[in-house]
Length: 378
Ligand SMILES: [Ca+2]
Image 1: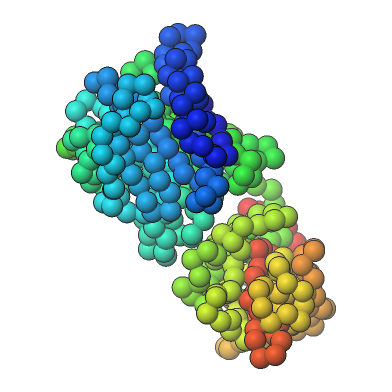
Image 2 (image 1 turned 90 degrees about the horizontal axis):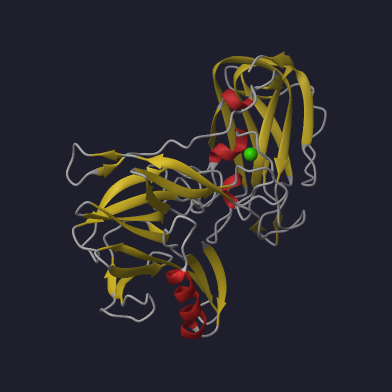
């Protein structure tokens, strides 16, 4: 059960809710565990809590978000605080959504993790989350980080829940995979969770999500998906993701990880370039670009459409593609450019930033297709 509350008086609101959950059971007599989010008006931040009857008739609660994780023992009524509050600082990248479980004599704490960076084992960008975990010999730690349970999914974050049912453990989490799904219109997913009992403490094996059968890719003129994308501003700001350029996805209201961008608070460059490099030469004669902006053309702040842009291909140096039809900058539809057919290893999009009073706006692109003259097999 997952409920969202707007919290004015935590004791008044949560007491009845937790008691209801404590008393509830399903048709087979299993207790129902409540998993809920509190939106605290004073803190203006969501807190995530995971009360869980871990074992031995004792009840613990973990909560926290944005790097702060705290735990405490509760009385059996699942409401009254019992023990001192502990702070957990040994689980790297803790973001939110702690889930406590016990298997045999080992406690496991699963959580949505985000320690961002190009070489992070968890997430490449700020908004994504992996599900990571730690272990302890006591329900209140000390906790030792053990690794990744689930890599980032299609929704930017993903919250864990783990249950044992008839001898098999399962991980529940959420994705944006369902029809009409999105980052904030999520659907529940469940996969088997398995253990590596050859190590001590037993490890949770990394889960590969079970996916619905996907339709076979159809022939397409777009050869961008086979290219490796790079940019002039690497490492790019962590809220953006270079792989968004050629992932085939375009959204009406993309979040930053669905964009390449170069906006930073500290200052923006007068221009930037993006480059596709293919493992073998490609023959191409058109490109389509989906620009993104939150400011109008001519702005010197935020993210604006580029002032101008062009395409260059590699042939013993960078050269403008011949016969380019136009370089539009609108953001409400893809901007298509046709040009004379070239065969090349590499294509660059050279962007000039919008500017005003000496200040440059940021640049952002959410998809860049490069088209061959005719369909190619996927
Ligand atoms: Ca994209």
